[in-house]
Amino acid sequence: MHSYQSSPGSIVYYFCIFHLLNSISCQRDSSFVVSTKHGETQLSSSNGIGNSHQTEGVSWFLQFSDIHLGKEADSQYLEEIKEFVENTIKTINPAVVLLTGDVTNNVANYGMTLSQISEDWRHYENLQKSISTLPSTLLWLDLPGNHDIFDDPHHTNFMKFTMLNHLKNDIHGLPVQRVKNNGRNYTFIALDASINPGIRAHHFLGHVSLEKYHQLQKTAKEVEKEGDLIIWYGHYTTSSIVSDGDLRQLMKNSLVYVCGHLHTAYQNIKHMWTHHASGLLELELADWYENRIYRILAVDNGQLVWADVYHKEWPVILPTRVITESEKLFVRLLIFTKEGIQSVQVQSGDDWTICDHLQGPHYVCSVNMPNTRDPILFQIKLFLLHGSSITIEKEVDIKGRDIGSTMSHTFLSLHLHSMFYALTCMGTILCLLPLLLFKYSRKFVPAFLSPCLQSVVGNKVGFGLLLTFIVYPWIGPWYVGDLAGGQQWGYVFMWGIFLQSSYLPGELTYPDAFFVFILLQLPFYIVILFKHHIRCYRKVTNFYDFSSFAMIWPLTFNKLARAVYSLLMAKASFVCPWVLCAIRNGIWNITFTETILSQHCFIISSIHFNITLRGIRDCDIFKHHYTI
Image 1 (cartoon, rainbow, N blue to C red):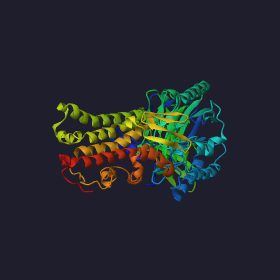
Image 2: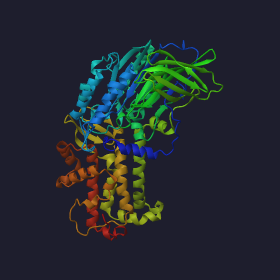
Image 3: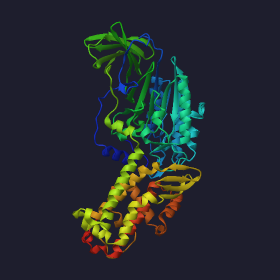
Image 4: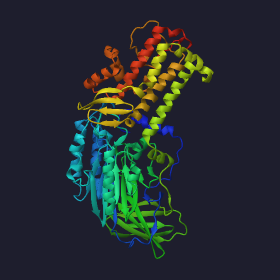
């Protein structure tokens, strides 16, 4: 494992989602998958696709994502990705390469600082020297991910280094590219959901404004009239985009939407693929940084096939179509290898058949018609020019089956911002209900909670502060001050982000609200109610005694705890916490997550201070001392 550092809390997002969804139904592993428009995976037997030995109408493309070039990347990683571009991509020689976001990392100080780092972009600039060695006919398409626009309101660095600068965006000012390859026309449309302006945080979810949605809608209609085969590509999954329009309905007439971002739920789900109810096929790809995985997509006369391949795994064999001719099954193959191939043989049953080599990576093999529609298991043997041979098993499934697992379908189908909102809302209500019911009507409160609630509710100031601590994220400003590179000043509320020149929807803050509730509010609330061994100092020695926070920090990141604690040690914390945060942010480049936690820690300190002064130590839950 590499020392990958994502934005604060991203690991927590993936971990929490994964463990909140309990049921999982894993699909049978396969090295390649074929798509049809009816939500099934199959290699269809067909008589109407011309001669089985023709290569016209067969094209292939390559996608990789989330390479996270950064100053923390070691030299071995940089050499490996250079080798991938110069050798692997050159060997496969796709018509189009899609780099779907998170080109750079832009994270420093163990995830504490999110900002544009010039060294990260220099790595991409150096990589472009390797890209320039690829065939001139190859089209390289990239677009920004959330890591590429941290603290960059106008996406300046990405626009400076993107390969799209060399291309013409000719439809409504959107990155749309038409490619004619092997007799077919393909249109690639970019779904750029990166936040604009690029503020320092709240990037886990993407955003497509109503104006941009209408632009995409016009573009899609124009392209569909041309009759082209459409491939959409983006960084965010549709489940992680806050949009004013239905993106899945918008892209339903395309071949596929390919994306990255979720890192296959941080390597917890092997294949994140699904067919949406609208008919859209969505394929999320694992990150290249940790997993070294890339995807080959092939289109054989309108039929999409794809394979997710590990880097340095050779040869790559992709069956693209099964054709029925004269009681025979002809299977078209694409075979990519770094070494020359002398011949290819295929075994189906007990018989070995020599494949016909058409041209380039195109091969065709014929087998007897099976008696059933069960998957056909092939043994494919490659005889290389230097005398060695490689034998690989491939399964050709001519019977339809569902794409993806229950877990992958769940991740890609629901709207994550709605899930975060619902979970945070339910958690807040469950925290408030016992307090309010015990305060105004004790009939519905379980008996085992009564001693805990009595000690809390009996102290009016402490009770008020605890309510404020729970409710504050829903009503108060999380942050007031500079939001991006000294160019955007504004306010962050849970119900909206207000900037000088624009507005971002509050849904972007829901993951952060959930993160704060799970790691800070809920643990502290439980400790207050149920911890019977909390030591209460008889003498207040320091308003910011570390004991106030010792019960919280084991549940949070160690580095984050140190930064927030050092922030709170300043005596200026007696002023409004968000004012202090705004000042500190300008000096130390403190991240939003820190400012959110610091506000809550200010309230925690007030509760501890009040408990100490008011003599709550005489109540039942504070009778005993606790040790750190």
